[in-house]
Image (cartoon, rainbow, N blue to C red; front, side):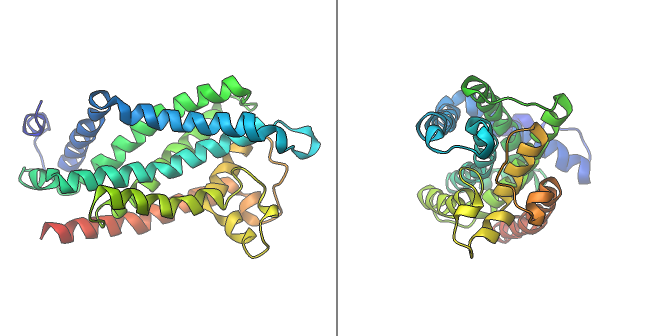
Length: 277
């Protein structure tokens, strides 16, 4: 079904109602690409599984935890957080591809809410990455990861992950609208994201970093998200310090979510509007 055909399914009305309906239509359009181009999901899943296997079986034996904890249980929350942070790279690449294929111009010619393209993109990314998280969790169970705190805490952790997908998607949208090509989008996104994911507590304790870099790692949103998951799911975190982000990781993670959306959503909307003039 074409975009025009999908538009006729939206309920009549303006304002918030129309924006919501149009956003869901755009989100559905983005999700329909997954079965049509299955390589997108396949390689994203394989990359995530590769990280699990590499760090669980190659490095796991060389990184003992104090007190004899299970490194694989320590590792998996970090893998989940890293995957979510890298989700913004996929968003940036997708937005840039739509921009340079003329898809945005087609959307602008339709009687649809201007914000629908951006909101639909972020909503579809949440759904897409939820599927990848399911595969990752199954992979984690295979290598020895488990949740020790019950269903409520499991769902709370998943909720934090999906919230962060939404937040990171706005960063991806902002980056994708500001680069000249898909190749540049890929390079810029990964250049920005690699320090965020590796200067953190995902794989190694922040105490092993240089003293000037340790506060950066402690307050890094990837670190606070990882620490939140370890706390909620009862996974080991023997390197937790007395710093505020380590003692209240869920609170700091929610604050990061609010800050990222509050900063990058308006920036993305402003950049999109400037391109529409």
